Image (cartoon, rainbow, N blue to C red):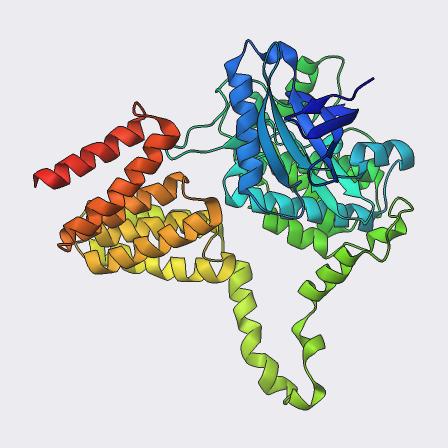
Amino acid sequence: MQPQVVAGRYELVRSVGAGGMGQVFEGFDRNLKRRIALKLTSANLDAGPEWTKRFYREAELMAGVSHPGMPTIHDAGIHPGHPDRPFLVMEFVEGRTWEQLLAHRGPLPIGVVASLGAQAAAVLAATHRHRVYHRDLKPANLMMCDNGTVKVLDFGLAVALDGDFTRYSNTGQTLGTPAFMAPEQIEGDEIVPQTDLYALGLVLHELLTGRRVMTGSNPYVVWRDQVHTPAPDIRLDRGDTPLEMASLIMSMVEKMPSHRPEDAATVHNVLLRHATQIAVLPEVGDRHSPVHMYARAVSAPAASRTAPTMVADAQSTFAPSVSAPETTKSFSRGEIRAAMRSAREFADQSRYQQAIQELSHVLEAAQLALGSRDVDVFDARIELADLRFESGNYPVAAGLFLGLVDDLTAERGPYDEQAMYCRRQLAGCKVHLGQVRDALAELGRLHGQMLARYGADDKRVIDIGAQITHIRAT
């Protein structure tokens, strides 16, 4: 029997599972002579264009976030037939899902759970930076590879926020796995980073105790308990769990998102303090993996690379550097949002100097703590650039918007909503600076890109066209 071949090159070897929207196969790329994973939409989804749209959205989301803890996207397309079926080609990931680990071993060692959880949190930190939320984290969607590294799988139900802060998937749709759904997800409220942290907390709880936290005779019972019933204290079943780690996990499964950890980085940092070598598990077959060599080189402390002859007096060498990390640790994302609200209130009263001073001070601390490309830092940077623009300081505003365009495009690609917004604002600065020709050229390029991607009826395309017309008329 001849094997099924997709797109003339991807030979399907065997079915390895099913995701939210289709079947996943192990395959072989005849052109590049390598194993691949190929996801093919279910034939019965052809009547629903939203499913096809969401399938392609998964490809975009995964391809747009580069992280070793996510499968690499190789290709996407349409497999002709009756009906036509979209397909997605990915890196083939070999290992065991956390569900399989639990079924085989039961409760896992505390240090191993901390290591697995820290890796998963690092992946979430990467996706959340792009405002991409998985929304279906569960043991079956988390895999431990043979070298001990973790891969987060199946972003088919992921939520991404666009420029208008609307969710990609329809409001009110109850999509996900009941046993790992956060209360706000069940009730159709806003999906936030803490939605994924809730699911990860339930997964970690299960890895430590060997028992599912939320169970019931039907999905409605589970949903009710997710909303109203607190998770059992993990130390009742695993009294040897370090207090800090137990407190973290219990905070992750709080019902109110505001009561959960601030972000995935916070979860990662705490778990990392309790992580041990994952190679204690027999399932880790490659104990001398080059991946570990690479990771050790990246994470090696500076002290280990300092020649003894270069070390000065301990007090004078280390005293100045002790205070900086403390400032970083005490910084809260809430300070960014509070500073933005306060700055906007000042701006509404035309008190731009106070607005800019307050936001600049907090933004400086935020960039030190979180980096210049953090999602909340990007928001604050845009707000500061807008304030400079509104106050009439177009040269400074132009420089800020130019830096934002470069960073946003490098981080998220040219079609990111905020990147496109900053390009429009940069053009506006150039008009005020008398650089009308440059402004029209920039807007013309943006209009062409948007037109090709979204079509002439898209509101953003229409708005840019109107902006070009207005500039030409003035």
